[in-house]
Image (tube, rainbow, N blue to C red; front, side):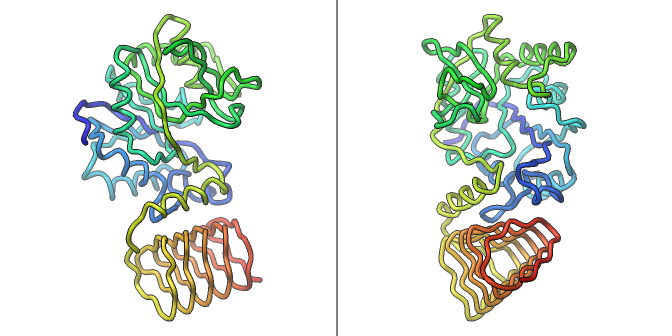
Length: 340
């Protein structure tokens, strides 16, 4: 069911994605390929039912790649504007640099490296049922709250928020999707933080700004997020690739398959040549790649890569890479060449 209420969406997508090096040496994290398309494509696909008034994408690191891909594939679906975050000074700062585009509109903040199994329209409906509150934050119980921003509740309202606490008072982790009604208040608080240089771990944290809203008497609520897929490091990237491929139904177009076996689920891009190989399950092969005499499963292979005579499992191979030899588990970056 399509959500009729209008809202602006802010997607912070300016970071360098250092935990995914070497793959993010040559591309921004939202452009890392999994399950048939870049991460940002999966995020935008899940926003279509929300029918946002506008999408404000905060870009920075290698922004041209994001802008080119999004304009080519989504400009006919969404009204999209880009804001440049010249310095990556935290999530709070990324929202602040978009203040002119946000205006006084209600906003949904959706992180550019988190993919949710459910569409954002489900979260929006939960937010609407929360009734009168200054903001609603998606949460989920997590095993290790020290790794997350956490929320502590008092009744149905948020009592405390803290970013990656050493001694967590709750196991409710912030899931990376926020709905803000009192946008002017939030932006004013972030501006105060910037003017006073109030940083946590060197950054202006959105969590700190939301806590200050609570301190000033604004009521914030939560809504439950059943599952999310973190694309922030190689292990979780492969796990997300597996989950998303399990949701796919059909094999993508392939330029040439000869004397090969395809074991679903897989995602295979355009102009891919596969000869004398076994592909799958849970393999993503990007466009213009050449695979010969190889077995590839539970792996992500970038565009224009040449793979020959290898058995790859739980591997990530970047764009324009060349891999020849014997079985190994690899995590190599773009424009690499490896021979065994």
